[in-house]
Image (cartoon, rainbow, N blue to C red; front, side, top):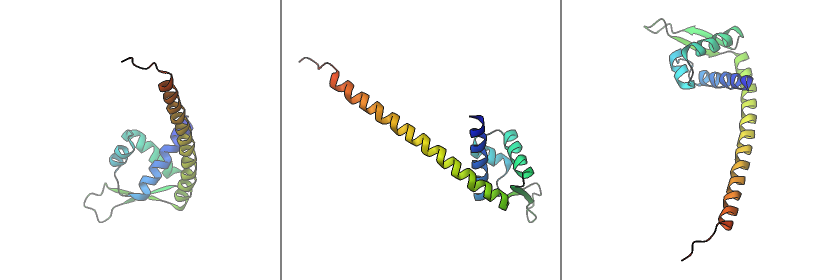
Length: 119
């Protein structure tokens, strides 16, 4: 389960960075529901793997602002992670749908077996 969570976090982070490369780490943490420290840790790991590059905003008055750019390696990793994420979510969806159908069946059987109110 831990590997799945880690994989999902990396997928969600890469996806978020692809769409919004100029988010601050604080914004990223908020979007993903993670602590700032965990966000920093995952970002640094992606940088070390060569999947994300960090660039300064040169035109910005705030030189502490960065852009997190996905590298070709990062885009390839995101595509792989997307495939796995989608596969897992489809399996979860199928299991949930089967459970809902079973519960609905139980309810309909229970309604048929319930004693009728006497008038």
